[in-house]
Image (cartoon, rainbow, N blue to C red):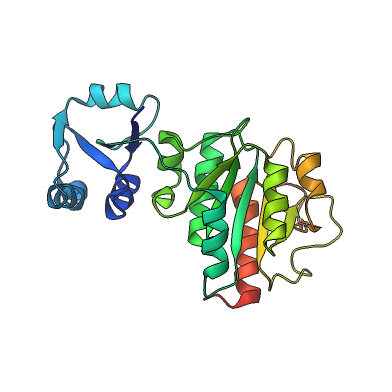
Length: 245
């Protein structure tokens, strides 16, 4: 079933990357200024532009601010795990993949994708069941990041981690209970960073597949972070240690 990508930034980045957009919907009466670049790109690519009443766009993207612009795309194309692994290991930089262990909130997943893309993660791995998938909300919250970050889905996350370890990647899980903080750990290696849901953290089977566990040392009264903020904190330290800038 076709999906809708809503919001100016998300639509613009997906247009730039040619992500299977088959139609562009623009709210009648919408001021052209901020969407002029989008309209120009759509015309250059021969993508039909339809002007519809705002209420029509509201029905397609309910409860979400589409900013008067929607892109209709064919089904989202997930990558294969083998492709993510091959691409990461072939990179000039050390491999850096991210695994989201059963994050069910689409908004959190979208924010995580935005953060991962910002810090140069080469791919994201999701479980097929009990996890948010790539939807309109995820596209929107990723602010265009979903156009650039390859995402794969697997049936068995623990088995996929075993496969990644077998390919020579170091599996590192983020958990508040670890005695090793992220500033002490040596990130200068081919690795997979595993983050869990805010409520449950890492599942036992996933935790057991990790070579090492790390934590972010809290300096205030609170002892937990939103998953995308936690991932961003760790990824920032990885980039700093590796000198990937």
